[in-house]
Amino acid sequence: MEQPRRKRFGEILVDAKVLNEDTLTRALERQRGTGRRLGQVLEDMGVVTEKDIAAALARQFGFKTVANIARATFPPEVLALVGAEAAMSKLIFPLKQEASSLYLAMVNPLDMEVLDNLSFKSGLRIIPCVTTPTEIQAAVNQHYYKKVTSQAQEPDVWWTILVVDDQELVRSAVLAALKREGFNLLEAENGADGVKVTVQQKPHLIVSDTVMPRMDGYEMFRALKGNLQTRHIPIIALSSKASAEEEAKLLEMGYYDFIAKPINPIRLVARVKHALKLIYGDSPPPR
Image (cartoon, rainbow, N blue to C red):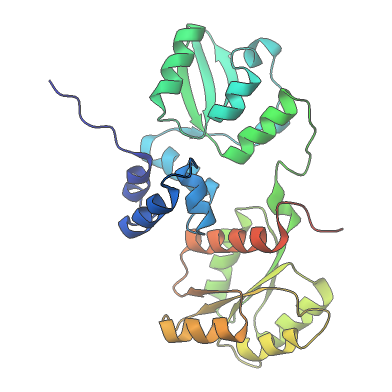
């Protein structure tokens, strides 16, 4: 009897509604011939984050997720089950051995070749758990190479983001989505308060509605860009006018990016992280 075809990684993300077919097609075209992981391509496109991918895999297939691996402790005999080179190249990390089972953190828990080879080599049943590439890399550096990277484990805590929106429900939803990622958050309910908070706190990024009382987003934008102390801070616009004309107008004004309402939390987080990475790189900002 013919075995059913195993779904590819991109198809799984589509089934989990993390992305649509058109986005997957564009990502696969960009990936072709580069040797890069599909997840990396999607992150660079600003479509998803590595945490979104891990959560989708866990939800779709009932895997457990693991985090903060670099902070935990592991006995040498468990670490010896997977070499440092294999851990880094395959993006896997041994978590614990219980009887004849090995719990293994993996970026791709559906990689049967890795699972079968490790099971054959160790004589253990492999139980996959889902995590992110950043988690694996930090854990390998910490536990195999003994490189202490205290801040690299949770890079998002470096960044402070200001959310400006007069609608409390929208503002709360944006704050909740960003809070789950570990960002330091500030909030304001109109443009005037947004200017005040920005001048006082100097956030690394602002996510702002365009239509608000007292001072709208356009006025706030012009005020901040006219101030030498705040003109460098990137601003992402939130707008209920989901048209190409509105997006073009805002980008021409100098907004860093545009997100249409209603807000999709996955898209919001992906765009925010993408902006921070492109503007500031992977290093923490000056203290």
